[in-house]
Length: 231
Ligand code: SAM
Ligand code: CA
Image (cartoon, rainbow, N blue to C red):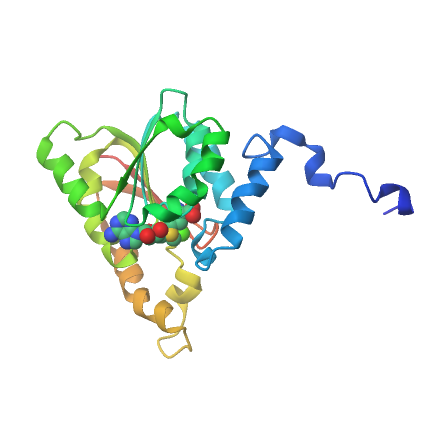
């Protein structure tokens, strides 16, 4: 590749040249939420940029409008979702930690999409139970993204299958669980990876055997399993 020397030093990097076609509509916002999260001690939890882009495209392809997210953290996947759905679209977003959501919120506000978000602080399971009991939420969600406590995914699935509409999609994140799902039983694994691996394996088996859904497991990010409700 030709090197034009000093003259190129002040030129924008290649990815910046595409300007506002990037995922977050603005290079500045795209950078801002990732940089802000990078400084946070639990930054390992954030959704990868490729997965954020994938979610954004998927939501547009299925014309999702009424959505739910379990596990928000600083809001990267939430922002990708909020930018993909129409202006009157909704995201019921749940997390036990409001502080981290509020760290990313100014960026979501700058993107002009905060009005689509109904954030609930607290464990997600009781909220799902309440919605099921209520009766009026059955089969109402176009899309649900689950990215929270892996030991509860099976419990979420039992409820979400009822709340998502037929033809709607549930995405379970981290279903490759650091690749540990295919590691031999005696493989050296970090403690938390080993602890949650059995829950992820149990979920993967349950989803594969569930006749109410069609599944597709994608090696995007740490693996995401898409479940399309068929009955
Ligand atoms: N989707 C986020 C993103 O794009 O940055 C990452 C989510 S992070 C992997 C997991 C989140 O789940 C944490 O913020 C944690 O507080 C939340 N969480 C853990 N247990 C939960 C529960 N029972 N109900 C709701 N949220 C929970
Ligand atoms: Ca995740």
